[in-house]
Picture 1: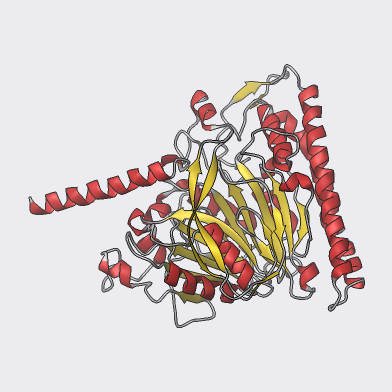
Picture 2: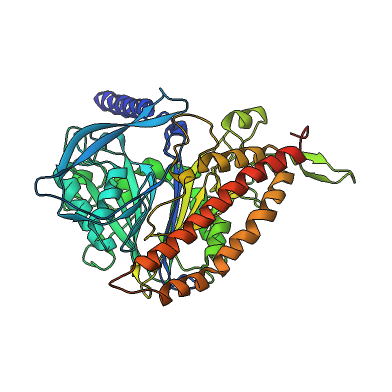
Length: 533
């Protein structure tokens, strides 16, 4: 009876923690983080030798505007403000409020960086992707000062290599505290890429618990809202790093039976995340697309931390992955929404929409690995922006670091090159999209409108969109070498301004071109398919 009461207390406590978390995270469907996907590639796994990280910022609240932060010198005694990110519903659309909760000392000088919602690259080719995995609710602490977005900023402002960024993150969060959910940051530099997973130290505590694992140079990795780091070997410092309290909390809390089983970070600190098919199915899909010869089981609970791709991965390969929604697999959750065409052949209805909002799933009785939500696809209708980032050690920093940036749903968008040395961006990219609602000045709204329209008659409209974006995307990839050679020809290490201006103009030219085309393309398909959606 005593044991039953104890078990009941534990279950009530856990349920209360998850209920409280759900109230703090209203956009976590079913209590699971389902926000982002990040794919990483070591330099021997890519077709040109790039080190790659990436990110789809899948969010119902995150900001869409982007700007460029310049390098800066700072006076002694300066500080950096720290904020807590909280849901805000007082504007035209759901957003986040950033409430100041403290400050930390500033350093003497900071590097410049591209200020996406989760800052993504600095002017020394340090790049970051991100995916939330949640972690045990008991680990969350509001006593810390540093959240995920601020940590990305601090890493890029103060570090030039992945290892340096990880060590600095460990020092800062140990001293000032981590106040966010469990996060995976995929951190790339010119030589290598690491996955850094961090959780809080426990309620009422200041600090963090973290681990980092390097992706082998010939491998690709993925994080899709679930912790993926399992066994660790801290004696192998070339592949593993961790906080000095990595084992302590797991033992003290009974989450790791030290004498009975090997330590696995994901099961000690984020076991809930490994139960989510929304995450595991994406892990499978990424590996199955890039390494189909492995014949991985789409229903496995665990996959390797990283795998060797069947062939070296190109930018085009990654675009295909990020546009994916399980088409031509058993997990395409619109496959049963069928009609007969004019010849009598049964086909998926052109109105069947893999990007339907959740209310649409209920209307059409959708079911799948994610229950009534169908499947959690890689391409999402609520992506704010997406990045594929190349870091290349054979080129100067001004040229070698490039963010391939897409706005909104990747399935109906196009990636343009934004170099890490850019000075500014077109006004459309720096214009907020969510606080004031729909407007024609925002790049995000141009692509959000196009994606939303295309989804209404997906089976037909997507071909009109692909007919425009696919050739342009290939053109951008094909002319990359020529553009960068011109930039290199004019490059002077002590006077890089001319190269920076050239690449800045190129980025701005294409940024303007694709936004203008997105508006026109939306007008075109609306006109072409009037009364058909």
